[in-house]
Image 1 (spheres, rainbow, N blue to C red):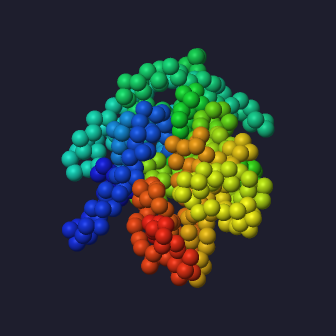
Image 2 (image 1 turned 45 degrees about the vertical axis):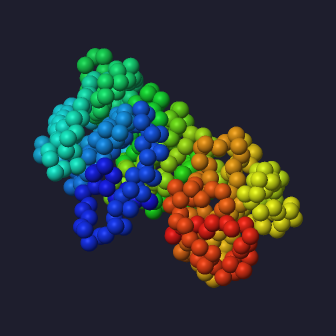
Image 3 (image 1 turned 30 degrees about the vertical axis):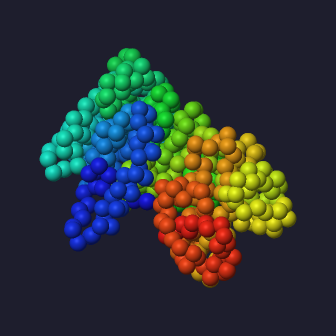
Length: 463
């Protein structure tokens, strides 16, 4: 689902010729985003973006999206990079860049260039966030931005026989002061420099700063906006849920696949920092590209997102293909629904025969949700069926997790639509993007087994 004009942030325009569909799409987008508006309100997000993103022509769009997050009640810490800006400043000064691996060697002349580049970029970001001109996405905004000498650093020192001089490592962050500023409804802007008690200034990697700040705050999310497009990586597609990985799964896949990806130094640092932050207590980290309409908003306020999310909870949305050992657990979930007439009764033998069509969501070895995806290849369609969730886990919309998996599989198989039959829960399907259909919309094979006496409603989801 794409947020077309959420709260006026997009610069896309719709003409009257677009007809009522444009209005319906807008309303659907707002309603779909509403649960995430409530979920994210009052939460603390750390958003990091490299200097390369700051140099793009569409940087104002990103900053407008960030301003919108703030207006929706999200507490924000921004950590910017400055690598290309530093390179440009060094070129102006006739200073040659020196690196050892992915770390810059920062001598006294280079640190002066770093200060100049970071200072100019920081003021530019502050100015853009302060804009509130009419006829722009920032119209009417009153964003307060603050910063300070909150990052204490120490030297990297000598590595592999090379002294990195004024290149530094984060030593500590003044978390109490950052929290105080966030509580005052200010966006906190942190630059990739740190200071020592003796008055030295150190050049830092923005990914390291973002990791330290997010970990210290116990942030709800750490978000890296990167040059690469995570949606194109093999990494998320190899997991059970496209775009979502547990920390354990992410570490395993990164170990085997990251070396095969053509990523910049900055992007590799962001992936490393995202994993490290999860290990240190940040619940969820996100890697988001820059392509398409407002990827930051789509990742945070739509069901399917557009990037890669890594969760510190290994059992979070841990969906997988069911196997014979799951039959008992599936039957325990579906039995109450069968007795209530919500599901058609099946025997154990039938479950065992159909087990390959089932997906399960498992937490601590227990099946807590399930569904079947019954395929009709001739009609390029599939039925989202036999959905059940453990009563103890209701209210978390785990059925939506299963639906996301079903949609991903349907698209991968080239199917055009999902459909569902229900007697008691049509509103759930409609809230998740389905529309009412009729038995005539069913594949011919499924129409032949449709039980007219049950009068099940037909819901259609166009893929």
